[in-house]
Length: 239
Image (tube, rainbow, N blue to C red):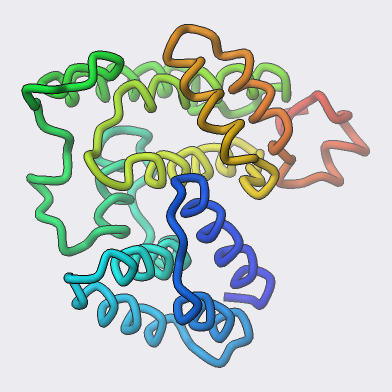
């Protein structure tokens, strides 16, 4: 990884945790700083994450391991099919010690009625994947259309809520990958955690305007020179 890529990976990992109100310890932040500076390499950072996770009696140690694994998530490629298998592949990279069969949210007596029925997760995920495929994974869209469609899928995936733990973090990694491949990058650092939670809550109630506003504030073209000089801010990678 280049120094810029290391810095970007650390910034994303930190924001991804903070959006779920998770806070890495000073020692984990120091490990991330050493990684950015090149004093700690990828395998050393992975070893630190494994050591921290072994401290299973400490919630903070688990958060620290999650933080470090998020930094490294892009170093372990997965099949980008836009389906439940992709979501599970991302989730396994964040929580590798969790049994795969136990990762998905399971039906509970006190299930949240605002979420998709847990017993039908695979059917719901398949429907979302098919819809994404029909839209060519949001490729070649002008910016306003891309923002509207990405807000739609963020809402759909949040309603699906496939994982009992680290669901939001997994979805944000997925959406970042999806957006990048479609020609846009998401700057989650521009997102206020309170506004983010409110936008998702309102979207679950049928109002995605706040989610669209949130996404519009953080979406940037992957190739800004082409966008600005050839197409203009509101036009997408196809132009």
